[in-house]
Image (cartoon, helix red, strand yellow):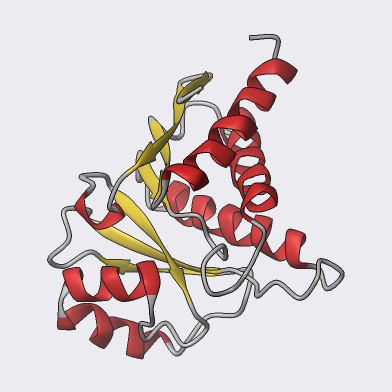
Amino acid sequence: MDSLDIGETEISVIVADITTLEVDAIVNAANQSLLGGGGVDGAIHRRAGPKLLEECRALGGCPTGEARLTRGYELPAGHVIHAVGPRWKGGGHGEAELLASAYKHSLDIARAEELKSVAFPAISTGVYGFPADHAAEIAIGTCAGYAKGHPGIFDKIILCCFSEESAEHHRAALAEIAGEMGR
């Protein structure tokens, strides 16, 4: 399953380069400093240009489980929401709650800014080591729950995966939600 409509919000899973998406906001899987790094974080900073780094410096960082908003600069997306997910430490250190919180904070920011389309990467699944299947369940569950609880706020929430393997985990989680909804 590649997409599911929850009320007026379409939640979809795609395999793409998130820096190419023309949406109101893309979410960056950021570190606490917000000053760039590897993976999707580095790719977003490179594509957005040096003004993104300047704005991030002024923010002074971000705690794990929260998010901060910047402009998109040279990106097709108008904004970047920098979400800091947890490092995986075996699962007994609140990692699931922190990951869900990073998604929820991102959606709260998008809602407050009246951004109608948001694309997420698979937060914390790269160098932070969060198991991809579990992270996908949290991502899809949090986004679906938010869309259900806030009808009409978003037109589109995209889970933008870097690999087909990640997309398969997200599609499975989406199918599970659809099943729970009787679809």
